[in-house]
Length: 465
Image (cartoon, rainbow, N blue to C red; front, side, top):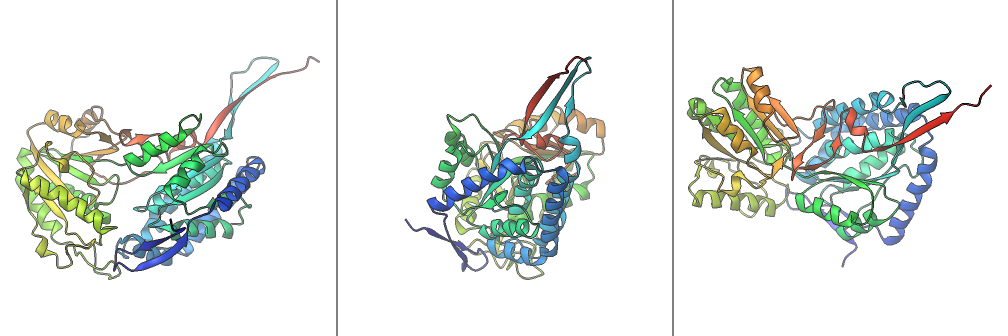
């Protein structure tokens, strides 16, 4: 087996970069360096950690445009959007987690008892192994990396082979920040190597974002070890448009939530339920707005929809669409409307399906592409039942002018995040988490520090005078 891999750009099927997988000696050295570094890094001050993390953010902000270009070449998102992964989401999340660290990592004092000092310290877990995906390679990884470093852990990062330059950018940022040797490192790895590292006793926590099958593989590799893992495994996120919704607002945001990043988002909208009173109008406006997208070369400034990451990913979505149509669904978008749509390439036109039902995989299995199914419903109760009829539970949204109705629906939806009148957004002040096959654990928010620290109790009896 070759010890090298190539990143094939979806833009033109060219080799963007070629890299070597880490050999056993490199893996051994990385684990050794992380173990050595964590002994001193855990004793560093929060001020020192924050200064380094702020410098990391500074590096990314300074290089946002060139990082955006690299990202477009690696995974195909239009260049007009890729820099914003750094200047908006990355910066917002990193700064929030840095700013709340002082409060979240402070000692927890027990009630006073004369003659005793009692408190709980939040100590770092040790070395955190971060496994990041290609679709939002900076947004997903920053959720774990910055708070892990702030909590006093060392970090070992493995990025998807589709986006290896992202891992290298992180290393450049931490080097620029003057981070001590061994505190942050990356490795380019094969799946078997990932499993072996997880089994190594020098790894203390795993943060994984990826597929359900990938999460199962992480669980298997952890078998027999008493460590934890945060698993963010995707979704089949629903939206419900009530009869009282602001139609134009719902259409505008749900089209964007369905097709941004070519639908390659774990929290993107994949199924929509619309009250029958609004259904016809909603579908008409939704299709009209979808047709305004421009599918094409993501390096061109007019392109709003780039290629999917690989041809086989586009083929998977096409197969789902064809299967649904065979079972009675109606496709409302003529792919020929989008000139760049071509069989045998990652360039796939967006698609809107009606006359769908939950007997079709398009409404139950993750598509991770530019397709959405829309169903008519008669009531809130019917929408709730259909929204919960899923193996996933990452996010869900309701579109309504009635706040109390939204809250009542939210209490009944099996999801990690519930939105009203917005979708496809991570607020760093709120817990990013999922239920069912969307995984377990939490990143972001004050709760995001819990998994990256372990409690240690101090029960100190004073000497008598």
